[in-house]
Length: 335
Image (tube, helix red, strand yellow):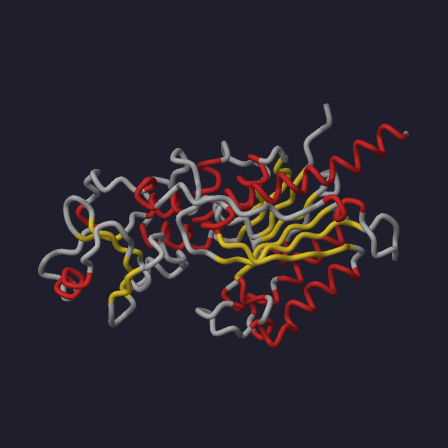
């Protein structure tokens, strides 16, 4: 039986991309993140994760003794998102992509996987993504990309569009061809059967802190506007927004700051915010994926919003591994 492919995960956060690749059969050999709270959650769910190298990516490299087959990175997206005013490479967070490229060049993996907000593709009239794609091609990779919505490709009840970039090493230097890429395809859409209230149990009473007190200044407008108990709403600073698709709106990193953008539901008890644990479920994490108990909810919300839809990553990772095996196994037989 073939050994599992080794993954290096950059900007690993709480481990969403790592979990997707792990569930697809890969081995997480090295991971990095600078956020100490995200690293705490990561270790909580990966048996301590001795391979997690916490700290500034500018000061980190994969040990030369560790063979890497796939470099995966959900590099910081705020610089390219609408919420981040789309400054791109003018923002320090956008420049962090250069560290992804550095790790790729240092480890020379067979494949690369990137995840980011869909606006990366159109930012600066397409020039930002063109720079990223060209840099990977110059490093010897054949690259493709696709924008996928979690509710269409992951059976996840969240309206979350993200761009996924996949690259495979050229068959020979300068050939611009890759048998692995020829064998790869992005997953097909799947029916959304895992609806929001299959994920969230409205009959379970949550901690009082998640409910809006009747004396809260927003309660009257929430109570008046939230006339459908079978959907999700959002408080948008000055008004209540109903999600007409019946799924959760895109989870964001600022959910824990000031209440803006936090998804809100009317459960069997009253009007409340989704809990951080429910936000993980809406991202497709398993029920036993948990936060450290002592962690502040503000950190939990940020981590859930910054993470990825695990089932989408898993489906792409499965197809990547299948394409890699189709070439590697054939090569072994020929040898």
